[in-house]
Length: 239
Image 1 (tube, helix red, strand yellow):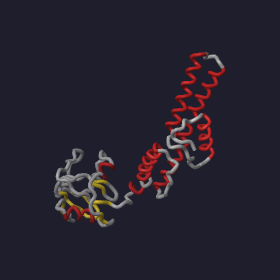
Image 2 (tube, rainbow, N blue to C red; image 1 turned 180 degrees about the horizontal axis):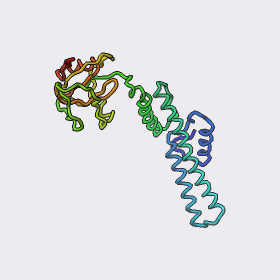
Image 3 (cartoon, rainbow, N blue to C red; image 1 turned 45 degrees about the vertical axis):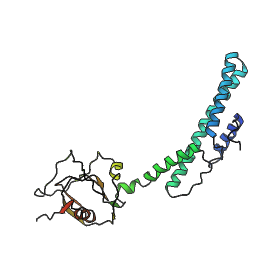
Image 4 (tube, rainbow, N blue to C red; image 1 turned 45 degrees about the horizontal axis):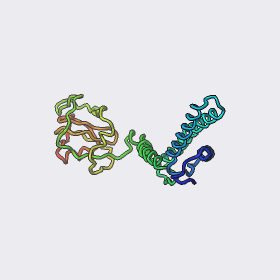
């Protein structure tokens, strides 16, 4: 294998191209692959421009131009083939696989880490959306944000539990709250009245954005966590 300090030749580029096309695995390449390929293309371009200036109709000029185009084409295809292989590795890693990354260049390792992080999040998207994940009760900030999109319900009103999740809040905003103690899933639901404005937080099946005097039904574990913090009281509606 060429050292990083060695310039890349057109033949070297062709060899890498054939290996990447032939093998389903990443080929072992020099760590400065992309800068070396760029250097080769710059050299060929300079040679072409020199012949173009001297005799644009010559066979030599046309031959260098064809080599220039071929080098650009192979470099793009090499990049895309390796990207596809790296993305497959990242998906395997997101599923828990252990990948050997020795054949990745520094630029490719950065690409791999980015794809891996996104894949780890996306691979469980159905579980998150279907409420399979555990829920957490957040630490309650002292400076709540009042909802402007819905009027609160009061204890004397007829209790009609509605979904008060605020669609304007992204999942990233909801999960940005500091984590607290995890509670197990509990099918028993409890109706509570909120005593003060609360920041958004996530539950097992929905997100919550609650304001003072709101009436809401939620899993008992979540409800009792708020009651124990003096953020809510249990409501016992009459018959």
